[in-house]
Image (cartoon, rainbow, N blue to C red; front, side, top):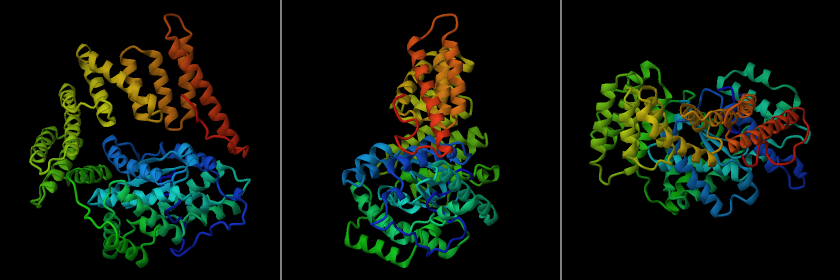
Length: 522
């Protein structure tokens, strides 16, 4: 993928030898050779601005919520034991995201952004295994390994560094040495490129610190050794390039033995599979390959007698059938999955909720918006993102055919979305739905502003400015005006214009101090 999702610090760019070491700054070196906390966040933001517009950047609310349910306790545990200091806590994003890619990979970006490929989730059999990888990547962030690896020259523009990284990483995904060479222009680019991989000492440090987070965050630390064993066995059986994680994180005998020793000498409780993880594992597999051929392979059946495997197979089959527009089969399979899940001992409410969300999506895809809303009403928790977004989609679909019946659910959805985005200001999908819902309710200014915020959230500042100016013009036209909304629009236009000026100045290499661009109240 062309925009940074290929492991800014983790993927080898030009077939670098696995044993290459990153030189850590000596104690006597000037601290100015490292990225400051603010610089690192700005660099991460520059990369993420491009990443969020890339087709493989995946915002699947259900799967992302699950990944965040693993990520957030790890971040909280790192705060609890002091690994996250006041500066990084305030300035870093602490954001995880999904990449629609079949390869087994995860990576840390500057500024506290951590990505996970669908292929990684699909290979794990327990949430503890997935947590062990996320804890490792989080430790790269908390230990400032990224800043220590890059060590840019003082005069280097952050935009220039980001551009070089983007080019190198795009080339590494394409496995094209010529493309990579073209991306690396000048000695500065070559110097940065040579430091893309973390050193083995850093990898072992991330293993050790990440392991310490697992138990504190509520996960079985044994998941780390299990994950190493799974990846080691898979690569020994077939090394087909599907495990870039192991090329940038060399799975040495030392790392495997140390993980096993930690498990034997420490908290060695077993890492148990759950139905919820099996569903998310299957969801990853479906989303990895939405081609007709790929979907047709998911029939919803399995030879395994295990309840977890049967429910997961039905979940995947229903998802695939719905995408193939085989609506009757999708409805039958998700209903059967729900019946089986209710017999699990112990029952898993989170898994049953995931099945209800799929049932609502299946009904919505089949054109039954009213039925989808009825299913969502059984879930409650209107503030939870997957249900909130799906409810708004269903209300909008119902509004198209039955405006009167949709009026109340659409009004509630818009109100709930407005509350949500007041706290989650970078949620582009929520802003887009808020724009559509507000438009349907005749709230023109709110719709225009929400559309602008959606563009800003994905880094399209020019598009955001264009929409804010249109909203500003509309607020000054004839007729009644929402003065509060008009004031917010004026303030946001000034902020976004300033943010674009700061980025332009950075591109010219002017100034590197101060808070990250765009920081401040909305």
